[in-house]
Image (cartoon, rainbow, N blue to C red; front, side):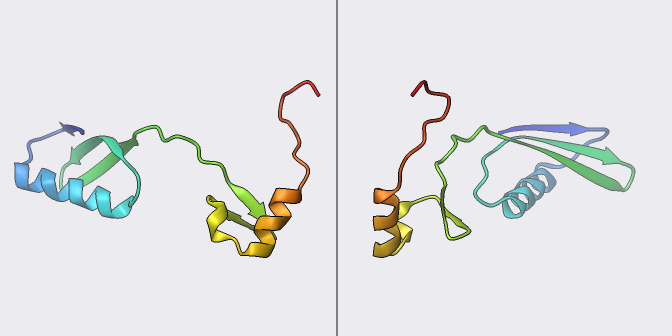
Amino acid sequence: MKINVIGGDMSPREIDEYIAYAGRKYPGRQIRQLDIVIDGEFVDIKTYFKDMDFQRAYRSADYLVNNMDKLNDAKQKEFSEKERHGVGEDE
């Protein structure tokens, strides 16, 4: 992770606290870079994230799941019997 401290000096302990704060604020996201901007007594944090691979989402009865295993047997059967439509393909 790249850390930039802008506008002043900061101890390694303070930097570690801001890294931990960003990790708690954005759980499940991989942080690529933090810009810690010191403005007098105030600190602004700019957070940059690593690109994430898109995961397929399944829509069923107005809710989204990212894994078919989370659906009950009836919904899994419904999806297996559903007609698939191509996206951007010549059919």
